[in-house]
Image (spheres, rainbow, N blue to C red):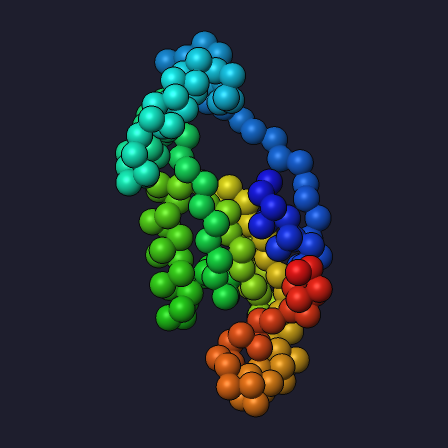
Length: 168
């Protein structure tokens, strides 16, 4: 678990849970050893360090080829992207579907409608990890009025959590 997702969990009041992993072995006799001590990873890391900085996409291609893993990606959206039944949710969901094909996606999102909590499981099936924070729409709309007086985007005040400020 990365530090960013840990901070997001603390803000939202979530707690980490242990996940179990299941491997389907195809053309293999043992579970893949995806760690830096594996000679295949050492070769990839050695090659990676020798490449110029502009070769990032090649770096990830080499990593994926040698490890069989996708690179991690943190995707933050202002509303839960499922179900894709409104304009912003349709866009976010389609982006998410594309990202999951090429990355291990860690999703951070807000839920502002109580009925949307039932869809968190659908997103957990798509993503590596999901952090969902409950937003009370009435109070958040009141908070967004603050943005009018400060001259900032209303969505900044709408989603601002005062605990973020104290975490530095």
